[in-house]
Structures are given as structure tokens and as C-alpha cells.
Length: 344
Length: 162
Length: 101
Image 1 (cartoon, chains in turn green, yellow, red):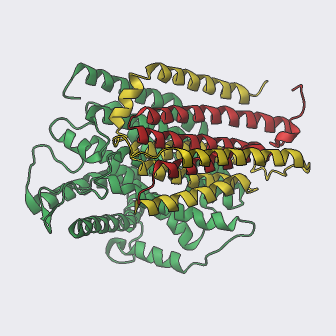
Image 2 (cartoon, chains in turn yellow, brown, red):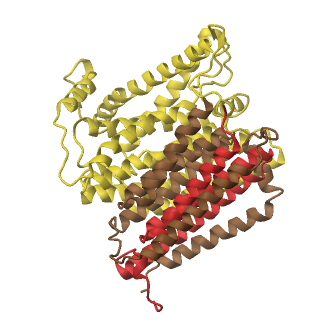
Image 3 (spheres, chains in turn brown, blue, yellow):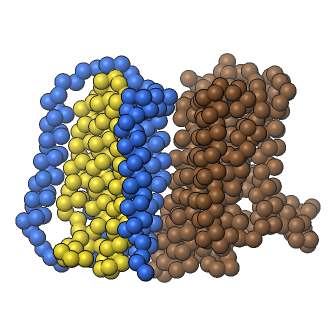
């Protein structure tokens, strides 16, 4: 019992460190990446290549005055950023972020590096918890007593409900091919054959597009759309409450990238590589982080390359584009499973 | 341990359910109902239905109540000025009916024979899916027709006539 | 001591009663719909408890059907509310006393 608890606590600490480090790193990558794409210098004064810029940013945010505008619904106004961060951190515990490779700690085998390894409904848990993330945005928009915020919250709720459907349908294809709802088994099933992204290419594309919509990133950041809504649902937020929304956005990006890697790109495995012991553990962790890092960069890359969708275009894409594609993918996978094609 | 979790979840569920039906602000109503549904999901998990627990959160808290919030915000959060009519008879009758429901349920629970559960069923997704698509295939198809009808009906209701 | 089926059924009964009180006493359309949701959920809880007691899955399958019906009901109910609000500028069900639309 004691050893088991220590192992779980260790996994939690590693996970929390990864998630919380990812935020400042991504802020730096985003600002430097934007500058690089737009052919300018970007922040380069604080530390070498501006590497300490995120710390300066967060110190600045911490010391800003924490305003509470008149006419807000105080309770919900305080609750909204907390819900956002809490949900963002909660989703990650069913994602296997490495392979234990037979390493034992205090006689307790690590298995796959996943906190909630007992939960047999992993994927469903993840979809369920991440669907709660919309409450943070909607409540922020509503409680701020501001028309722009309200519009941002309204848009976010409709957008997230619409894209969740296509996302869940894309995930369903993977579950059908794997025959299990556990994410470590999804990874294990991909290690012996092609990664899911190849036979289920349609599902992969749907998932990537829906991931952008679910994290409220450009080209689908209609909920904050600076040019129309000032800053959308977080107009009225300042100081650390604003920082909480930024943090949850970046943590959601990490989670959704991790999910993408796990479901479609073989998680922490590389084809043809089988290592044992601590070396294998470190390599698997590095492989996982590398794959996630690629998608994080993709988020930045797309953000600074594509213009924002109009709201009706967004809805049309979601309902008339992604949903049928995801359904076609699901039918194809179902046919493949029924015919016993092993490569699917 | 299990009893503690149950008691906490049950008390929280009842308190938030009371807030959900009695508070004047519709947004507070919806939010406390989210808490209630969460506690019911915990109860599902205690009963061994993990799959249902996740589905409960996904469907009720993640989709249905968000839809409620969406409509409340769309209508500009009507602060429901409950019309000044006083209807003591109807109010008493309503409370009495609710009390009858509660008393009846509690009596039923207290008088029934408590046997140890037959055999622990795991709410495995595979088992549920199999049961749903073989034994209950007809009901399953009926449900899909119902959902389609509801979708078309909802669209017709909110369509503006030009 | 582990909770027995009676505990779950008592909880379900309480939730059902609270939901019923909401439906019967409130006059705001949204509150009434929420009360109905609460009652459906109480029914679900009882179904799962009995399914556990009898050791078969029928109860759990039925809960899924209930969820689907609840989704359909909410969609139609909220659409009705939106239509009523457009007409009356209010979702107070007491104002719905006209026989002709």
C-alpha cells in the first residue's frame, strides 16, 4: 500500500512539473515563434534570447492590481478562472506519458506512466472532464456583466458543444480499432502495427481540427476574437485571474496534444525500438515529450499563419465538414474491424 | 470509507438539489444542478457502474446543462419575476405531492428485504454495448428515431417564419 | 459498513421528491425543466441500484435509454422556451394562459 502510494505520488509530481513548466516555455515559444514568423525580433532583452521573459511576465501579472468591476456576480466571477485551471489539470491523469519498461520502485512495478492506471474508462473520463472546461469560459463571460464577455461566452458554449461531437466520433474510431477504453492499451495496440494516424487518416484530421476549436486557439478563437470582442470572455479579468485563463489555455493545449499523440501517433513508443529498464523509461518519456512538442509548435505555427474564421464559417465547418468526415471514418473502421483487417 | 464517500456525496447532492429548485437566479440553479449530477455520478461509481458514471458527467453536466446555460444567456438571463399571484392551495397541494413521493420512496426502501447483492456486475462498456445492441436492439433503434424527431422538432419550433 | 441498496433508494426518493417539488412549485419554465431533469436522474440512480442488487445489466442499459430520452426532452423543451420567450418576452408559465397562439 505504502509503495503504491509513493509511486502514484511520484507520477503526480512528475506530471504536475511537466504541465506547469510547459506554460512558461510555451509562452516563450509563442512569443519568439510569432516574432520569427512575422520577421521581427521578439522579446530578447531578459536573459539570453529572452528566455527569462515569461518569468518577468508572470511577476508583472502578479503585481498588477486585481480589479473587480462593478456589477459583476462576485461568486461566479471568482469561481470561473478556478474552474478553468482545475479542469485543465484534472484531465491529464489518464494519459500515459511514458513506458515503465519493467522498472520497479520499492518492489512496485511502474507499468505505463499513468496516474489513474486502475480506471478502465480512461477515454470516456477524459472526454467527460474536458467537456466541463466550457463552464469556466461561459461563467466568466456571464458573470463579468459585460456585453463583449457575454458574447464570447455564448460563442464558446456553442462552439465547444459542436466540436466535441466530431472529436468524440474521431476518438470512437480509435476505440473501435483497439477494443478498449484504456489509453495505455490504445498505445500498446499501436506498437505492433501502423500508427492509427495512417489507417484512420480521416479521424486524425478531424481530431486535429477539433483540437484547435476545443482549445479556443486561432483560427477558431471566436470566444476571445480581439478585433471584434476586445478580448471576449476575459475582458474584465486582470492580474492573476487573467493569468489563470492563460495558464488553462496552455495546459489544455498540452493535454490535447498529448491525447493526439496517444490516440493517433503511438504515444511513447517508436516503431522498432524496444529498450528495457531505466534507459527505456527515459527514452520513452523523451519520445513522448518530443511528439507533444511537435504539436505544441503546430499550435503556434497555425496561430500566426491562418486568419480567424467567421462564426457562420466555423459552424458550417463543424457540422457540415467535420461531422460527416468523422462518421465516414467511423464506418470505415467498423467495416475494417468486422472484416477482420488486422492493419486497421 | 465507502460509507463516508456515500454520505458526503448524498448530503451534497440533496443540498445542491434544494438550491437548484429553489434559488431565483437561473444560472445558480443550473450550476447547483451540475453539483447534484456530479454527486449522482459518484454514486454510480460506488455501485460499480464506472462507465455510466463517466457517461453521466459527459451527457448531463457536459452537454445538457451547457445547453441550459446557453439558452439562459440567449434569453438574457431572465430573473424570473415569479408572477405576483399567490396560490396557496396549489402550493400546498404541490408540497404535499412531493412529500408523498418522498415518504413513499423512503417507506419502500425501509421495508424491502435487503439481501446481499446477487453477484457484482461490472458496468463494463463491452457488456453494456452487447446488451444494448442485441437484447435491446429494438429499443435502441426506437431511441435513435426519437432523437431524430426531437432534433427536427426543436428546429421547427425555433424557426422564424418569414 | 458499506451502503446497502436501501441507502441508495432513499437518496433517489429524496432527489425525486425535490425535483417534483421544483416542477410543481416553480413558475419559471427553466426551473421546471431542471426539476424534470432532477427527477429523471433520481430514477436513474434507483435503476442502477436495483441493477446492482439483482446482478444484471438491464438496469444500466435502461439508464442509457433514459439519458437519450432526457437529451431529446431538453432539446424540445428549450426550443419551446425560446419560442415562448420570443412571443411573450417572458418564460413565466403562468402567463401561458391563452388558448390561441
